[in-house]
Image (cartoon, rainbow, N blue to C red):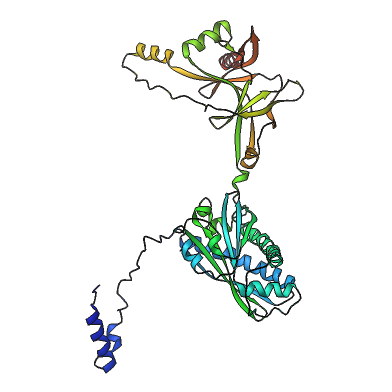
Length: 420
């Protein structure tokens, strides 16, 4: 591509003006390569497919609020999506007039926010219709009074209900109003350079034309951007991370023992080494992390075991494993295996809960585990079930007595198979 100087451009324009050359000579040829300038200050955050999906979602929203506003205002109302663009938050704020109706909304459960801006022409047309006027264009636009803000608050809340319906095919948002401002400079939604998706609606109420803008900052919705595809939009079930099951495990103790130690207490004493009693004899684990301290409620053999949440733990679960290098000598390998630390865990039971329910766990919460009171506890070595046991207290020390081993069960099964 050739870059022309200012003088050369002037000469070409003068030649075209005097008729010495034809403008067609300067048009690019059809086979020429198309070049798109990429602005690193404004990187694209959304793909073309994601932009199309956003457009589809908000077309549904525009149809819903067309019906809703027409009935509420008792006037012909038409709303449609004019454009879906990517721009930074600062540019969006600069394009908004003052005063205006700027509503900031919560995006639960994403813990983010987005903004809806209704331009003054549409705002005052809506207010005028609702207070008994004709809904004509307002000539003296001003900052909204308390009564006018209350009217617009109700309108925005109804719009949020329709927007929530439109998003339901992708994600089950719980949309709620945070605040309404008349000056967009007072809304601190995200950083000025943060990119986002701007959906612009053309709105006509009676004889009044105007626009409504919705701005989604990328950093507030980035968790669901991957689902903004038509494959997800047309699937039967919306994606809702609140309904993803997570297994919680109630654990009594975790210690590391060598295989030699495990062999000794399984074959001879059948009693794990004793440990001092602790006030709260159970921990509720989320994955491999101890998160809550629990109190084990008294057993009732006809009901499931129960624990009561009494607070959060201070220490995280787990210790770093030690690396072990195997030698060529088989005996050395055997000796090394016998002394290698194995994490032995005694589990009281477990429970499956949704992420939303986990967030609601607090002090005093009582949880019902999947095992009945009186059932043996599970003894696991590095996550593998090796035995069943029962909790015992001996001279102010807490322990677990082995009452059944997986090894014995396997031997019994082999004997039965041989007998057959």
